[in-house]
Image (cartoon, rainbow, N blue to C red; front, side, top):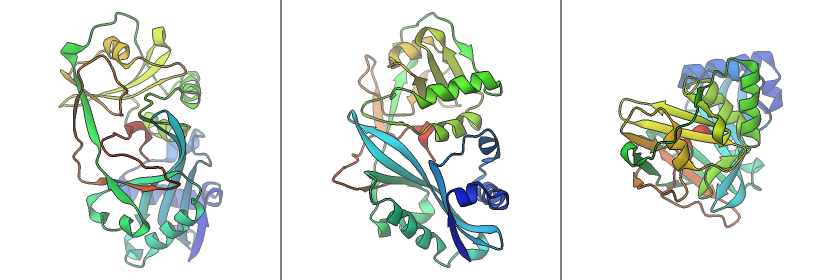
Length: 290
């Protein structure tokens, strides 16, 4: 059994194919198109154990810049923690986590999102849970803004390139809490579950990811090189639902916002470093989940 990380996985076709298969078998994730289009770069780093060219355990890191109260922090997100069922129970995830932690002592914040089956695992590495919030606005409170809104097709390469460039040079969607310099993760989501949910508003030079569910609309992200006014963006959009969930922590906006406790089957875990404290009652942006 060999330990390998980073480019040694990404640039090895056999190992990369094995990574794709394990991710699909474990989580139903499809990384192939994201990689083929060139969006897997060195900010997404797998730490793996391999046996005879097959990855049997993985812990990945994703690097970005976190905005908290207007200040920037070096942040590392841990994700895609998975082990081939044949090799479970051998402590492989623990060993990979130890290697990840050793490599990131200089990060301001390390964090992850875990499902309910492993909630006892991460506190062993110094992680603490954080309570998240939901933020909801009512459609009736939104003043319409009559302007052109275009549906975006990322299968069109020039359009996709503009979307990517905008993501690279974006302004934070919120100064309270948001992510920048994580364009590779945003592109993964845009190419997969949100590919049919992307709009462009020429008036504000903004790309908008808006997802309609059976319960409510979800404003996933607003991506622009210029500061955005969330209230005006909401007024532009073809929203069908009576309630809109803001899938990030909004700055103060001139709309009534209902804040509740975010309830799901898992938890957010944070390891604060260098005297940086990530507070409770924020919402990590959906478009940055790795």
